[in-house]
Length: 174
Image 1 (cartoon, rainbow, N blue to C red):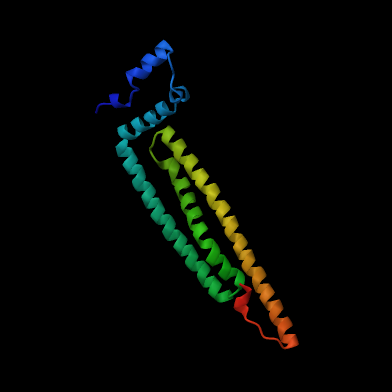
Image 2 (image 1 turned 90 degrees about the vertical axis):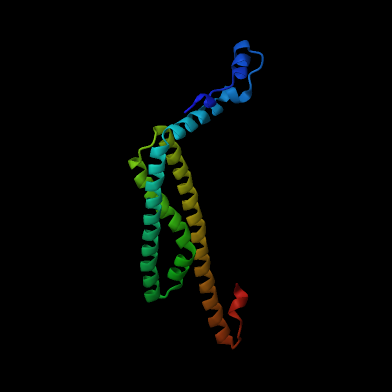
């Protein structure tokens, strides 16, 4: 395998040595860092494929676990039949699927045989995804609260209208 493709061209070395003009991307080292990451990927592709296989299995197990947990919650919801339970399942199941999957991947991550640079990158990516998922869950939980307030408003309005003998359409409240 020829790894000379990953070295900087000699024209840039000439420019740097003679201080004629240094391109800005050479000063940051971003290209050198990206090329180093590409070298690691190409050299250790067998371990990368093995790591991707383990991550794939982890994703499948996490999704099956989520559907089992969701099934238990659905059965509990059918027994209680409250607005809160139905709204919680409807609004928060999708963000919880992502959070459960990210937690499963973060548990398996230390077991993977990948380079420390790649491991740090993946940990950082998972952390960012986890932050976004928790934020999304909090936002979706406000929809649960919205359903509870709307239900309470409907009950109060219905009692008031029954007291004065007025009928109304519940769909107009949405």
